[in-house]
Length: 154
Image 1 (cartoon, rainbow, N blue to C red):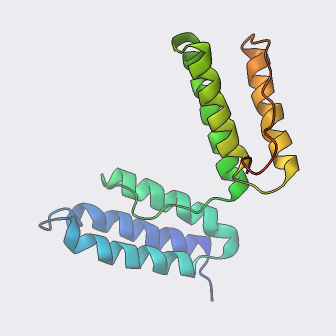
Image 2 (cartoon, rainbow, N blue to C red):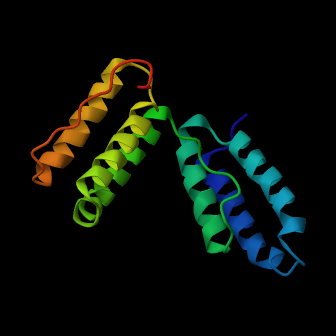
Image 3 (cartoon, helix red, strand yellow):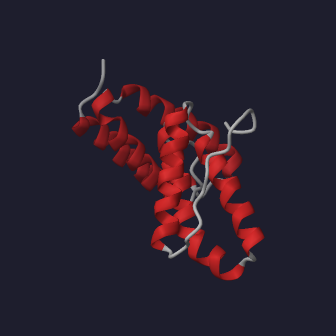
């Protein structure tokens, strides 16, 4: 049986309160396995509709305690693709400014191919192409990205 969000928050608060005390132990080696077990327990107790809330709280608790996240929320292939495309968009101005045209296009094609490969299907390749071309247009680049064909793509 799943716990209510209120009960989950109480348990997450207790976990957060225990971590600064755990920092007094001789090292991460002693506390990390116990923390991973507790994280798994909390995730198993969470109702499906509270899963995102619990993942977010766990991330914040670990960050506040100065720990690298021991577990990360799994992401869908589509979410990973969107994350990759946001990174392309973030780096695009710098790459245009600081790279030769050959370096820029080699980088862009590699990033676009990696993003397209995250999700199966030609429609995903077209989605990546359209997003990349929108970024290029916004940056004032006249050349367009084309989807590769054949076995090298995806």
